[in-house]
Length: 507
Ligand SMILES: Cc1cc2nc3c(=O)[nH]c(=O)nc-3n(C[C@H](O)[C@H](O)[C@H](O)COP(=O)(O)O)c2cc1C
Ligand SMILES: [Mn+2]
Image (cartoon, rainbow, N blue to C red; front, top):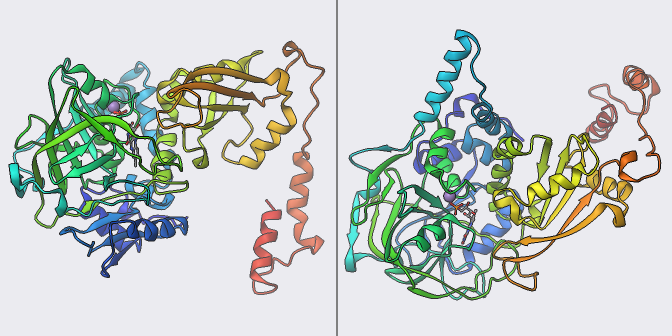
């Protein structure tokens, strides 16, 4: 990964600044040729994402007035640029700093502690008087989703879907804000559906009302605020607060024009409206991140009362489908950012990995500091009881020295350390809304594989020692490597490629 110039380390303030940053860094291509939001843009994007290619700004999307931005999150480098960090783990470090605050000792510690607390207080969204998102205000009959290049992503999709929205609602009882990313199937110029899956907070807000729930949808945000809509926070935590914390400056909001919901002032586009209890319509099928089409199910109907936007608004989109797709990096960001929070409740967890090809809910690999018999099984049950990780279908547990991100290494320990009869547990529990494999929707089997080394109290024969070379010999071979003449490491001689390969041999 090319490293980032330190001048770019401040997170982008809005989508405009983000696009400018991507462009300066050679991470964005403008496409002036006309392209069709009906399937064609999906195929172009799919090829670009798979090649690790740039963000794409389609300036002429067929049939629509506004341009379309896609693949803004599609590589690790861009995801790091979004957060203004060198590595995604750096974002986690900031969060764990606050989560693991201890009572201060001494005055210096107290001042540091106060600063951290202030960083939380300053994360609260800030109400401002005006926002660029309301330069144009269309209400009633003027509302027109046909202005936007909403994609129909896959051949089996019955309609276009908005795929990268931040859907804002409030809990009718407590007033707490929720922001979630839920796809929205277009029904007509002024109506969409709202795909609130069964485990999600937006749906809980909806179920809590006995009448009408006001909803605002923000499209085209700075990348951190956009990401926050996909973050699996507990229901009582406002995702905009997380966004403010991660940005280091609050999300600025203005009051909606037709709803009592605040919207990000710098959004490109805002859709305002309402859903009503028991006003449902068939949604789907939709080619989703599981790699399959989802079934047709009733979901709430979203009636638009206003559409506000910037004069030259840019519509943001994403394609989900068979992995890997652009959303892989939104998921990886969540995996990294939430590690400290996972460790708060299960401190023996050293690291974890949710493989992209496991579409995040099918598999978790967890390394632990094992301290007692049955410990790996305890951790499996902890995962199955922890927030959205509870939907994980299979959990593999390895010892702390195993690199969970190296799937070959993990597979080695699964093969070497597992007696399937003793180390595999089958359990049951809730599964992802979209998982088509279980016999019943929403629930089914779970598998846990304990690939840790077993101790005498776990009923095994004496466990053998793992092979590794002594540090002394390794150091000697490092020192003498050139003497052996296996690889020519003198610059300027030998093939560059061969030299590089052999450098790896030197560790
Ligand atoms: C591109 C993308 C599309 C998503 N689409 C949906 C969706 O249609 N329905 C849904 O319930 N969750 C969807 N999700 C997952 C939610 O955004 C995620 O679970 C989030 O935490 C929900 O917010 P909540 O916890 O406040 O409900 C999607 C995520 C991404 C990254
Ligand atoms: Mn939430």
